[in-house]
Image (tube, rainbow, N blue to C red; front, side, top):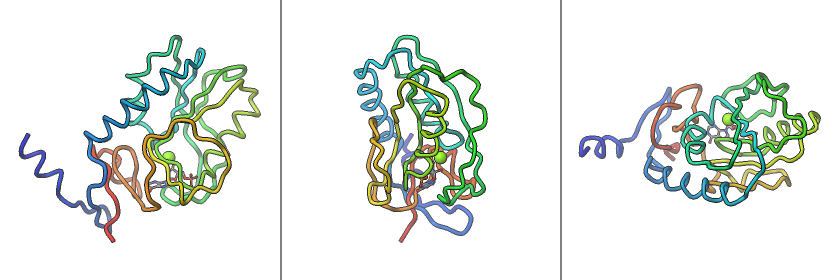
Length: 186
Ligand code: IMP
Ligand code: MG
């Protein structure tokens, strides 16, 4: 345990960049606990949680274990986009939407919302499929980077406009399995 604590304070290197710890796994647990309470209080009727992978896989696993809404369904969606790391907005299509979403209440589960371009595209595509309602749950939100007007109902934590990795978030595919969230060293 002591060893773990010690290691968790160390800076890490992914590809060519150095990162330092920003949000510890214990803080992440508290954030998720609070989010789950808000979601449970919302009383969304027969929701389908649509988890945006790869980034939201750990967040969704921890969050959804705490969601107690009756008749909850979970589905996964991968965005086809050309760049894995940059927020280019090249989101063309949704792959893997297996369940029928027509006339359903959707909760989008995202790891992070930056410019909001990705979120807007997901919402547009879901609306074409005639869903009843869409709400959004995101672990992290960068208000300074956000360019859209869409309400984000469930926000875990607002963060400055800095690049972060860990707990699902990657830097060029590295860092997703880290238990803590790290930010780029200045
Ligand atoms: P948006 O379309 O600009 O809102 O960006 C959303 C997507 O960009 C997220 O789902 C992430 O995949 C990626 N992204 C944005 N900011 C970061 C970051 O700080 N670290 C890792 N990925 C990020
Ligand atoms: Mg993502």
